[in-house]
Image (cartoon, rainbow, N blue to C red; front, side, top):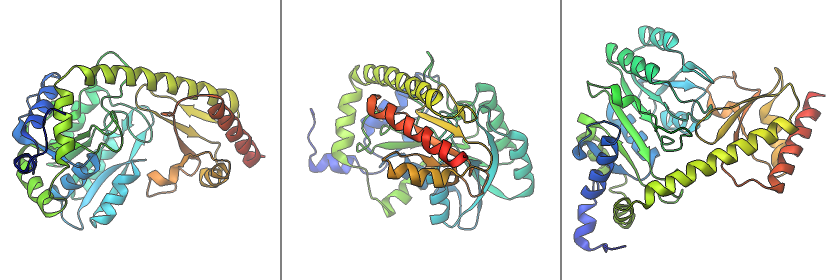
Length: 340
């Protein structure tokens, strides 16, 4: 690290965060044709802090917030902690959130915000089309509803072009775009941010009242790393590796799971969404799998309803070898026993 964390640098890294790092993030937005000022960016301790601060900035306890059904379980936990009411909207495993159902929700409830994942959604894995992102932004603008865009998997795409965030189509500063370096560097490297537009000052104030600031040494180290070409070279290697692992896991699941099990595949992220036959219980399967040292995430974790009892999420990020192959084989045996 070429810079040391002096007393002055610690002060410089207080909210909204290190100026060089915010400029570096703004330049990455510019590469996608987006004009995001460094002054709009607030550095956070990971994406989850960015998302929580964004929620606090645009809502008050008791407000309604739209989430996908199913959605990232961290969103449900955040809403509960902040005493907000979750309004789940039907979401398709390939097409994403149902905009007709979303508009009906906006007509019938005083919704203040939507927390949505537009790229590599967790747990389903889809990436919304550009057309749907534009339509989503236009719809929320008509109803004056803020979009909190959870975009932590944006760098983990498998095609040639990085997908644009929904914020690209926002002309009214109605989108708070949250992302992180944690998913594409190392999990312990908890540096995230929110491009908050006119909400930036409010988020800085909230951050000063809670975590005070994000780690100064980490911000300084990241500034150095982003100033080289190593980060983009690392991302290219990581995307290839994750795509290969996902393909290996998918093929193994097709080999070993019963034919009546549906494996929903997507071209982004590192999750597969598995659909068991109707009546099967993924939570019971998860408990039995864990006894065999196999970890799956039952669908009930991702919803406030019982709609996803027979579904589970399978993580494909791990290196693939004989142990993983045998684990999937054992998972297939456990599913057959449950269906018998």
